[in-house]
Length: 234
Image (cartoon, rainbow, N blue to C red; front, side):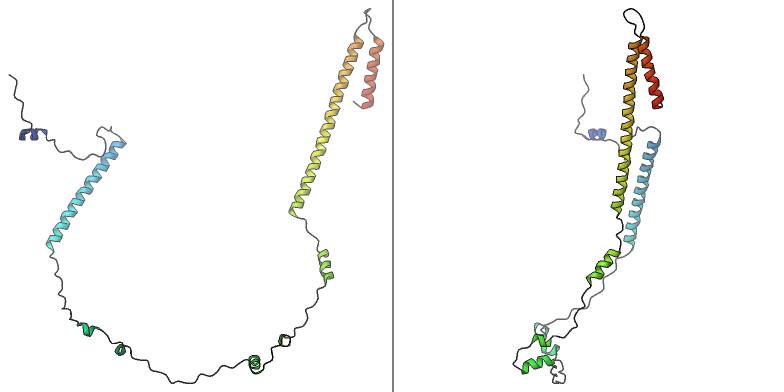
């Protein structure tokens, strides 16, 4: 006969399923021995120490507050009863009229002579007569100004110097290019002349139909070469 299954709703089931309480974890438990494990252990110890200090501080604070009695509040004096009729102030009593100083007649301001003349006479004012006489301005001498301008020599500008320098460099570069082109042309002419002389020598050294060499033609070509070398300095 099979054993009887225990009742899961009873107290025995609660006791068997209840797990033991574990401490908090900062990092994984399966770390190898090394820097990471030492760091995790140090952080956990710091947290435990701070929690203990906080718990002790709360206990000391609770004991200190219970030992000291709360100070009694001082008794306030009774407030006076104010009637509505007495609370309305009288503005005449609070603000007495200021003392009036001795009244003295204010002196009339003095008028300008021109204004007094306009008030007394009916004639309109003459602006030409009232305008002051100023001396005439001296005329400028344009000749002196022009001579002064001509006397001062204009200094060369920075851009003018740069343009002159650029023109000089351009002229030098053009001269170099012309010299290079001249030498290149002379070289090509010498190559063409050498190729022409080589063909003439090959033709002169070639025997005729009878197998005889053309000595006269070959000597003529050699003589032209000697004259060219002696006359041209090459």
